[in-house]
Image (cartoon, rainbow, N blue to C red; front, top):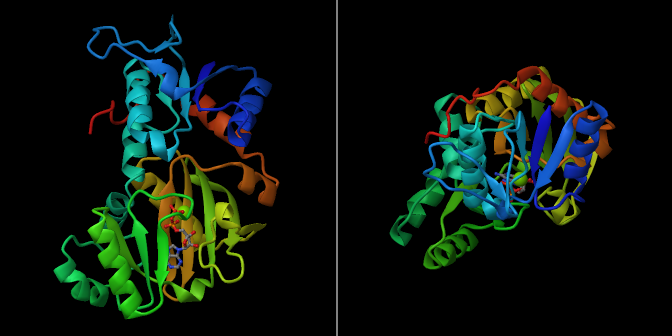
Length: 301
Ligand code: ADP
Ligand code: MG
């Protein structure tokens, strides 16, 4: 097959591993910096251009679109979808997953376990918002943050009030969430491919930190997950419409709670912690599922 990987840098671990795995299985791979892709959007024959050349019709496209280029990246991916390429994850699903609030609303609608979460606009509603989420300690999150940046733990009601007030004053969207204390600074990253969790790791925050992100100094280790956790992760990826997803769970007293669903999960931490060849499993998934014009959404909202 002819496969394109949308990635800003072919030296990144995940990109490198996907190239290796695809080539080892006999596929032809091209890495495209999504910001150098451009298109004539009204042409009756959809095409994508790259550095002066017209790109071929790929059998499959693997999007590795960073959070900072979501808008442009999903627009380019949508164009590839219109050309008939099989997207590993659809543009619509990626856009959805990048909005934490929208993701939680979609998951809540289908009864997935979630931490209590509130959203408000007016500083006059802060008191009620705090109460709605069960009072301090509370986690306050920027809606479009990643890698733990923009996630704050407010230990007291007073701290929560002032942090929420400050964010509201800056005109950024935040959500306020119940703090799952019993998770003890750990979460479980489940790597879902298709309808299976193919690898899972526990990430533990460093001492004095509650955020377990590896970018924030968290450490990863192999973990055995329960059937309930497995089912929750698969269900969450399915609801989001993602064929490949990193589903993050918190172990709470009331069972697994989904914290977030990532559409471009990094492969480095999980392959290292689990010694699993996730990249090859992703390529095998594409081999089984890639057919022309097979997107569920065809790029529609
Ligand atoms: P990001 O997208 O920036 O990774 P997350 O929502 O995943 O944001 O939060 C970052 C980290 O903070 C999580 O990996 C987890 O360790 C911790 N965390 C987030 N929300 C909660 C919560 N409600 N209770 C306990 N810990 C949390
Ligand atoms: Mg996270």
